[in-house]
Amino acid sequence: MNTCVETWESPVGTLYIAATDYAVCAVAFDSNWQRILANLGHVRIQSNALTQATIRQLQAYFAGTRRTFALPLELHGTDFQLRTWQALSEIPYGETRSYSEQATAMGQQQAVRAIGHTNGLNPVSIIVPCHRVIAKSGKLAGYAGGLAAKEYLLALETKYQAPTEH
Image 1 (cartoon, rainbow, N blue to C red):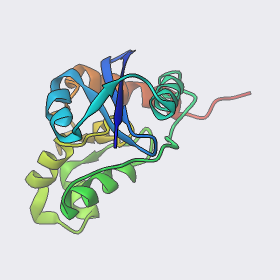
Image 2 (image 1 turned 45 degrees about the vertical axis):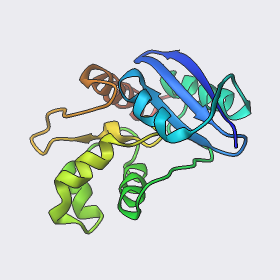
Image 3 (image 1 turned 30 degrees about the horizontal axis):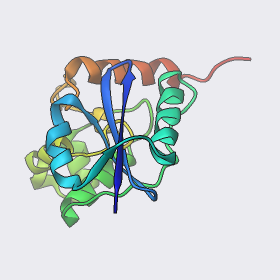
Image 4 (image 1 turned 30 degrees about the vertical axis):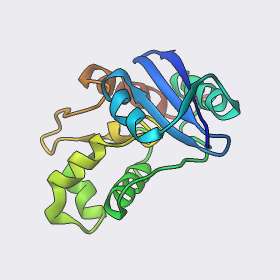
C-alpha cells in the first residue's frame, strides 16, 4: 500500500503528514520524522485526499475553530502503546494531565516513565494530543516538536477554550 507524504508549514514549524488512501499514519515534526518514516515503508511525496483533509483540519485547529479531529487514523504499536495513545486522545481540549495522572487513568500507576516514553513515540502529533501531558510540577516536559511548540499549542487551546460571547 502506498503512503503519500505532504509537508505543511504550520505555526509551530514544518509538519510531515503521511496518509494512505484510508487513514492518516503520521503528523510529525522534523525532529521525529526520520524515525517515523522508517516505519512507514514505501512513500510518495505527494498529497492525497487525507493529507489535504488533515491540513484543512489543522488549519482550523490553529485558527481556533476546531477542537477535535475527524480523521481515520492508522496507528501501529504494541497494545501498551496503543492504549497510551488512546488515553492521550481522551484528554479534553484546553486541559492538561501530568504523566502520573495519565498513568492512573490507564490503571498503570507504576508505568509513569514508560508512558512518558510512549507519548514521545506518538506518530500523530497534535491529532493525538501528547502536548497536553506535562510534568507533575506543572512544568512543560518533553515534546517532539520542542518545548516552544508545546507551549504554543497549550496557549492556543487555553485562548480558545473559553466560550465566546455572541
